[in-house]
Amino acid sequence: MAAGWPLAARAQQLALPVVAFISGGSADAQAARLAGFRKGLSEAGYAGAQNVTVEYHWLEGHYERLPALLADLVRRRVAVIATLDPNSALPAKAATTTIPIVFAVGEDPVALGLVASLAHPDGNATGINFFTNEVNAKRLGLMHELLPKATRFAVLLNPANAASAPAAFVKEAAHALGLEMLFLNASTPAEIDAAFAALARERAEALFIAGDALFTSRAVQLATLAVRDRIPASYSAREMVEAGLLMSYGTSFVDTWRQVGVYTGSILKGAKPADLPVLQSTKFELALNLQTARSLGLDIPPTLLARADEVIE
Image 1 (tube, helix red, strand yellow):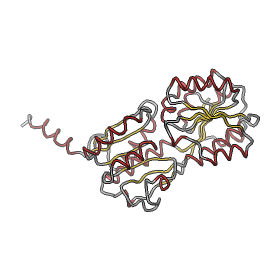
Image 2: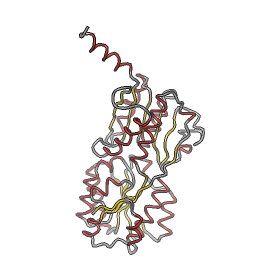
Image 3: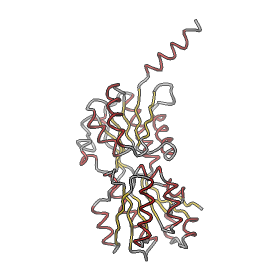
């Protein structure tokens, strides 16, 4: 009788629904966000390996892996695809019209073609919109408040990620503030080094890093270079400030990933993506690194300090 237990347990495990989790980043760099996703799944009634199998696919910036990965997921008919990266959501939507997809994107999901409307997705996809473009404009304004004398800002982009490009109204915000914008590209760690060399040559006074999974995974490299070159830098996620960047402003990605987890669990329980309205982020975070500010010889305005959600000493 005892010999039958391993087979029974294995059969039960094989029968569990499979959630395919896809992130363009790395597990180490996004550990706090992952905890948020798991918390959301747990809130929806799915914890550990008791009643769901979660396959974690970390692309680490290698989006060329997506086609083969998605083809395999569709072939195996996984229960849900959770895409925690804008560059994964559209390929997933193109790969299947039947497998439920839960996404997190910063752009308008209607304009992207992911859903018919926010209130009525009318398809196999739904998720969270975290307002990348609007947040970028606000972040630029906060940087200007912190660095009122700086007029020449560099913007670091990953050209492999179309979603990381600042929207036209971010450029308009820069123009309204009287800022000159210098655009630099980097898709590899070596190109990040080259971009910082260009920053020095071009005498940039501040660095605005566009949101991207590669940049999140290279937090230590970016922070080290920014400190070395004594350039004030900002990002959209607080992990970068913990690594040593001066400031960040953006949605709470831990909360965003938690919401993706909740929706994933709801679908596992039988809800249809078409009936789940696209949620919009309501929690945003401003983080400042006082140690970095001191090393740069900067005094953070008291009004900005008072508005910060996190101040790293």
